[in-house]
Each structure stands twice: as C-alpha cells, then as structure tokens.
Image (cartoon, rainbow, N blue to C red; front, side):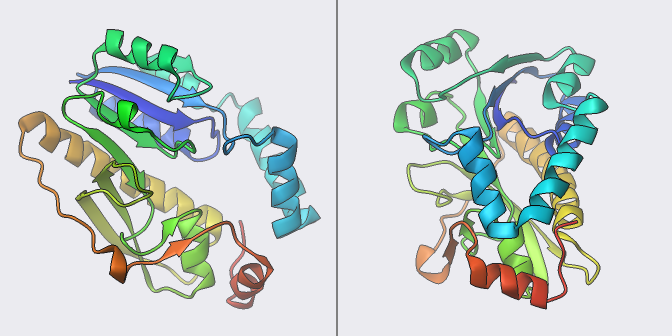
Amino acid sequence: MKVVYLTTDDPLYLPAFFDRVLAERAGDEATVCIVPPLYKNQSSAQAALRWYRTFGLAATAGLARRVARVKLRRRSIEASCARRGVACEHVDDVNAAEFLDHLRTLGPDVLVSVSCPQIFKRPLIELAPRGCLNIHGAILPNYRGVMPSFWMLANGERQAGVSIYFVNEAIDAGDVCGLRVFDIEPEDTLDRFLRRSKAIAADLLIEVLGEVEAGTATSRPLDLAQGSYFSWPDEDAVRRFRAAGRKLW
C-alpha cells in the first residue's frame, strides 16, 4: 500500500515505534510527515513554560536532559526513516491547501496519525480512499483527549490499552478498528508506561494495516455517553499522580 504517516517531532518514544512499523511494513510505499511538537498557536517557549508550571523545575530539567541525550545519539524519526529508505518530510500545517495538494500527488491509500497534535479537517480526513487512522493510548471511549497515559496512572487504573480508529471530525470519536488491553504494572513510571504503550501500538498498527490492505478491517462505533475526556493535567491531578507513588521516569 501507499501509506502516509502524519506524526510529530518526538525523539523519545516515536523512533522505536517507526523502527518497528517501517521494518514490518517494508513493502509499503511510505512517506513520513513530521509536524512540530506543539499545539495550535503555541510556541516552543510556551510549551516549556506549561510543562514547568505543571510538573516543576526538576521535571523540566530532567526532560531537557533526556531529550538532549537522545539527540546526541542521533535518535530521531528522520533517522529511522533513513535506515529504511523511507521518505521523510517536515510540515507546518497538515490542513494547509498546499500540503493537501502534495498529498494528492503522493496518492496514499491510507493516512495514519501517530501522536500528531493538529486537529484534522474534513478535506484531509477524506483524502485517502481507505481512510485515515489514528492511534490513541487508551481504551476508547475512556480517556479521550490529552495525555491519557498520565491520567490513567493518576487515577489508579489497573488496566490500559491502545485503540486505533478511523478519524472523523470529532476528537477521539471515530469507529474503532483495533484494540489492545494490557495491565498497568506497579513499577510503571510514566516513561516506562509510554514505552510499553508505544511498542504495543506498533504491533497493533501492523495488524490493522494488514487488515486494511486485505480489505478485511472491521470497525465499531463508540458510545461517547459512556466515555471520559481529559485535558492538560492540573495541580490536583499531579498531586494524585505523586500520591499514588508514580514518577515521570
């Protein structure tokens, strides 16, 4: 298949994800498009300040050190693509008319969103004939929204999951076509949890893409009345996270 991945510039967790997926799906004609790791109209300084205000100085310094270390090792999505001979591009706005025109020239069968922080609009969602997939790190419709891994640890959940769904214009609300459930372990830090979740997500995406290619993918709608939605953590959530004995790493 022709597959276009829409992702974000994350050197901590996504290189390993793409190493696994691109190796297993080596027969695809793939392109990876990377957007900045920022929400709409947010600068890098604003993102750093929000992290600092939420988690504190020590956590902010720790995150900066971790990012610096992986960059020194040249761990990146771009490097993962280069090892597999996969085209990799940097994009500012996935909904921009000029980018949509570029996608049409690529002619993807399917689009795959991997932690892409931009909200997709209908022209993008409907561009690929076999659909647009998104990976969400929770058992949908529970924990829709931002940072589900953090919220599950803060709320003392015993189980977590990864969902893959066909994107629509609502947030984390499309028809689910893949699900994996796994236990949250007592020793899980947020970092350890995310690494396990991304590894499970990679295996699940490989399975779902195989079904999409074979024309055997099935999906089910979500009952959003039974779910939950979370935004960026507040001070109370961080206190509960720490009171539960959890750490960022």
